Image 1 (cartoon, helix red, strand yellow):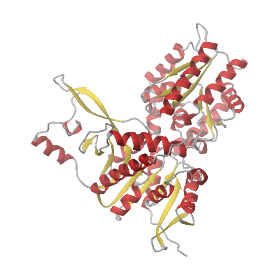
Image 2 (spheres, rainbow, N blue to C red):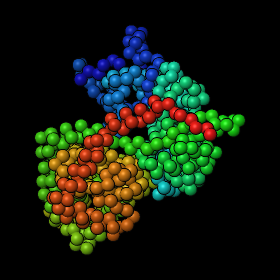
Image 3 (tube, one colour):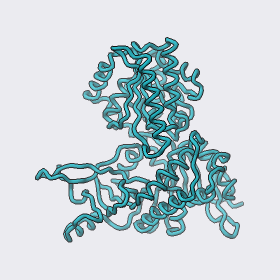
Image 4 (cartoon, one colour):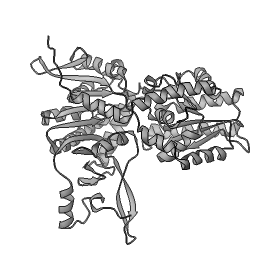
Length: 505
């Protein structure tokens, strides 16, 4: 397949003829009425060959919920997506891909180490997930976070049209709204936080808490996964930023002590591309693949499935402990039940994640060494990422889905599993600490810290009657079908477009 010239990499070291530069510039306009800003662009590099068989590099759309949610909308608007292209110390010029204009932000190796691996994922991530792991606070990381957020804000300010709408995504870019507000007060700015927002008591630990809040309060609308997250943010804004709250609106004080702006904080639970999952679940080839998965496992009576990034917030260790105890007690037998655990690689340069991988793989090895037989394996552990087609096949093969997160903004895997079960079969064991539990109330809800309670829920899922399964799954599928990812983005942008009625009385 030949990669169109507009989709080939443009790097500082690449040769580019004058006609190519002219054609590339013609396809990429300079100002946009709508812009999405996220840490990463919605594309990944891919290698292919041209008609002559020569290797060349291009781009393909990234997997993942955010890209699935926003890419179709971007192709219908006069918009651009701003983000890092994924390679440090490399300059990539703006380019066009699949009807989307993309504006790369250049990051150095130090930026990636200190802003992303450091402050974003070793400071903010554990803090925002209820300090499940200990956050690290380093001033050099904070300095890098500020510097990189300004890079993103500068890129948006250069390319946004007068009065444009800008939608900033997630915890890596919490300073961008205020920086944009200062540089471009004409912009309409929204921010969506995809992970939880901690209680004021936990947020208080952050040395730079006021700067983070001031950054977020530069937005007109701040969106969260759950009402409790929005409430936590509002309480922190009042306590640490001196804002006042009136009718669920945050009144931000100006230098003179009067109200300078009004910011809204609301919950907008994100969802999935329902049509895509449903279509794949009905594909004969994927149905056959699901049958083959069961056969390869020896056709056990029950297949349990966990699908997670290998992250300490996902409760994988708790799930393995509960499963091991059920085997030890004889409630489950390896001849009848198999657990498939997909643990996709995650942040492997961060020490906590390397240690977690060692612990999880050691636990899996211990369980299999204790309970495996020649014919049967207790846990099939897969440290890989898989395409969506294979994931849907796994959803169809699994009788029980285990989502045991200790803290999770939403967890779209739970929604994907329910959507894929088009015949309303199966069972979902779902942590009450995952945002999805607010919508999927008919799941078997658990506190994953309560190992006995988790074991009881697993056994209830294993032994569930067809009638109860159908009742629960049907209700959950209806909720997801009525609130898909298009509904999420439309709700947020509609709210962002609304005029705020101020009540300064």
